Length: 158
Image 1 (cartoon, rainbow, N blue to C red):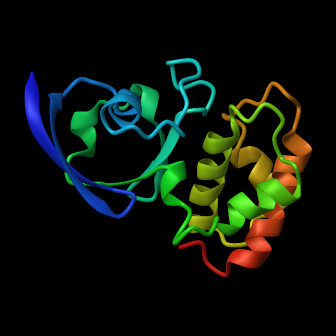
Image 2: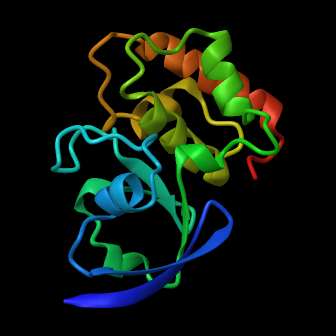
């Protein structure tokens, strides 16, 4: 069924008429042109499609767009402000916390969600929190180091 939905995307109001069973991932990528959020598995098992909905990390590949009506959505594109990268994004660059980069947006967004709840997580908490996000390149150690650095520099993520 097609319906009109409204939500806030990266701080800006959005209103669309879409099939309410369409997955949020496809709305972001194809309807709104935000390609930072990646398609990985399509089954919420890899973390590549992670976005923030009302301060919670969610897999956009299995989230029907009707579920975000009236909510706040944050994508990787929404983390930078006024042309400046977010401290988490900077830390990923500083630590070379990526190789192919495919998992990177989901990792960064998931890390952001963690830092919203826990400003100074331990290495073990970071590892546990990112357990659902897959990286085939083996950058996990650098990813964790980057998040630890970001946690020291963010003084509250938002």
